[in-house]
Image 1: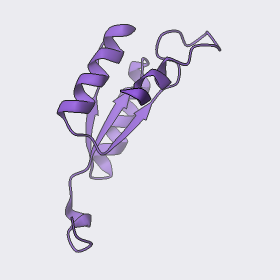
Image 2 (image 1 turned 120 degrees about the horizontal axis):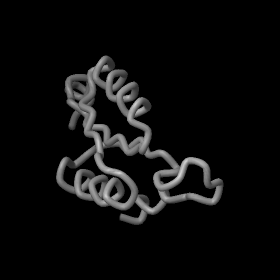
Image 3 (image 1 turned 30 degrees about the vertical axis):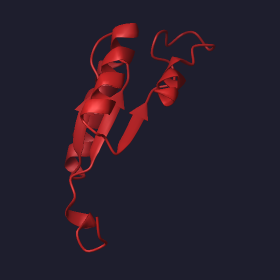
Length: 86
């Protein structure tokens, strides 16, 4: 991609969050800014599995990932980081 056409590129941004309201807000913002939101769906481990699948198949350029995907109240939940290795 050259500097000339980078502004016209349709960047795909993966959103991974277990809070539906946050996902909806982020997807709206990303669309408003001219990017394509790719939303991982599901809950718990199925959310993580869908995120991995979509990151590989949608060829996303960037990912916005919530740190606590399994339990928002558990300060030790670092499940969002599990996606970094994949």
